[in-house]
Image (tube, rainbow, N blue to C red):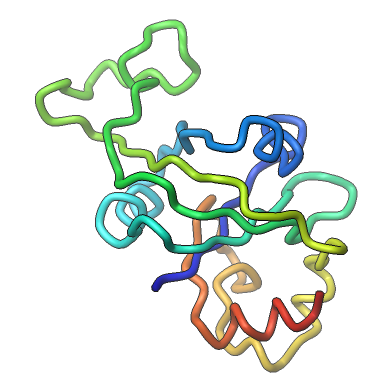
Length: 150
């Protein structure tokens, strides 16, 4: 099983939104590396941390599960969408998404500052300088360490 971290601004889509809808396509990813994670490495049943970004207290707030294999992100073909890509070919879509399902909210937010202060996370992609990806891999050891912080 692989582990992941999914970033979302809570004003756009929060852990509470995912809890309410139960399952949601993770659309709008327009970075090739993040797309490749979804398309090539994520498997149904993989778990991910739900991370609130660009908010007063950024941090890990919940757990989600990959619910479907990657498929074409439909928003790339919707002209009125912020994620429209006029160069994407329906026969060979450029952008992919997976559906994510709500697992649970954490008992507390594990803050970015708290994660940055830890030496036992090793080379954690979230705290690496200059890393701005919306989807990041998490090692099994990092997953366990972070869950133990809860």
